[in-house]
Length: 256
Image 1 (cartoon, rainbow, N blue to C red):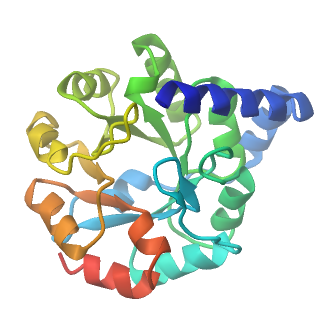
Image 2 (image 1 turned 30 degrees about the vertical axis):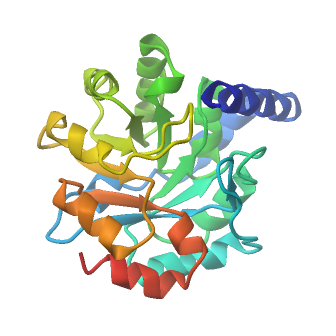
């Protein structure tokens, strides 16, 4: 599944590149206001922090919500107390777009994450051109050289990188490139099975000074509390927010 998602994302990026060459995207990226400081926004605090996700669909769950106005949803997230906004921009299986990201960026003052299957530089420049402050790099999708080069490019553009892991080896690889924001995804992106305890099994390998993000398998405040008790500084939440009253749900989750 992961290899198919990456291949599709690269094919879609190539289609966009044909209409908008790299040099135009680079120019648009340089014209953007500087990226917001996501590490400060997500730094550990007395209570858990939430990255709230604009997510229409997923390969495992199908359609979750129509979300005709992603900007309005993002404003609700900010109102509810989220510390950052994640926007799914993958087109084929998540029904997202860079237009969603641009709309969200224009509507909120929080750092915004481009959530996609990023595997080459064009996508990183696209992210900054669309206003992203954070980009996602998935360790399982990239060899170490590519992971490092995309991390370095993102950093050179002023963005923070959320480096996503699924195993002890991947956590080590994330730390080796200098990641300051490391996610552990409970969802295996090859099988799409969930293991809510994976975060707790890996958290101790992420040193102090590196922000720990728990991803996936969040339905209730009890799930957030479970991650918090396991050492999560930040929890990324998508489905639970787009299928409920986002403000009320965020307020409930943020009590943890």
